[in-house]
Image 1: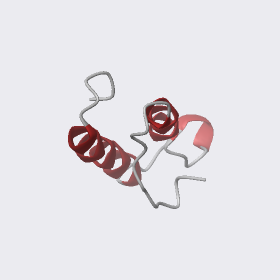
Image 2: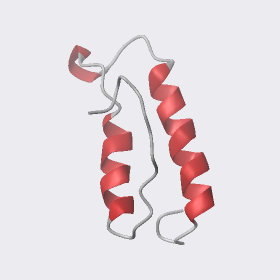
Image 3: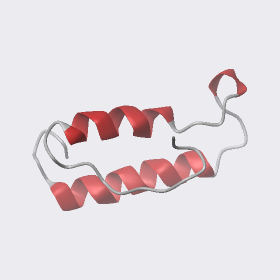
Length: 59
């Protein structure tokens, strides 16, 4: 969605990825963080597509 610059598609996709992190019981290195979401948000920001997200798993 980022490469296609599909803003609505990106928002739907990134929200789904964040939801999957929030549903987990285990995290890499036992650190509860949505690291994939953080990386994708940085890539999306380069194209002015960053989604407004709120979660205890995000900085």
